[in-house]
Image (tube, rainbow, N blue to C red; front, side, top):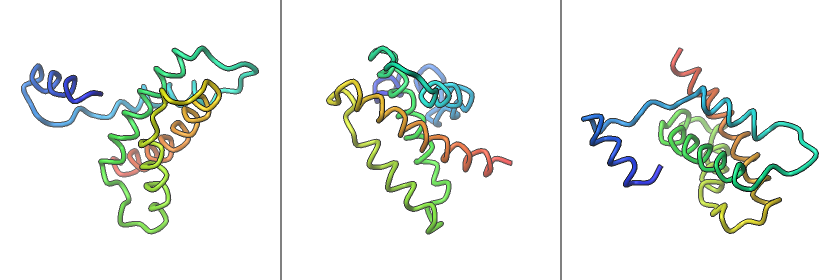
Length: 118
């Protein structure tokens, strides 16, 4: 979500609090990205799911789910590296692989998020 879009959302909702993380959408995007296919999906679909997975992962990382856990630090390092990638600069195959990496890591953070909410 762009800063402008976030500001518009806050303006309409009347609060500056962060919107809740949509785990249902995250699960659907993860399933889509990790499905077994014999051909690359359309680039527009890859870009759309990459954008949503990037947004979800960014929100999950900001939750600070396990920053103090030494075992989870590698997940944070991987997340920061993936979030720094400019997907639009990747060719179709690399963009698909990036989307899949985002999905795998987002799944880990979503599991931590669900565990913390219980």
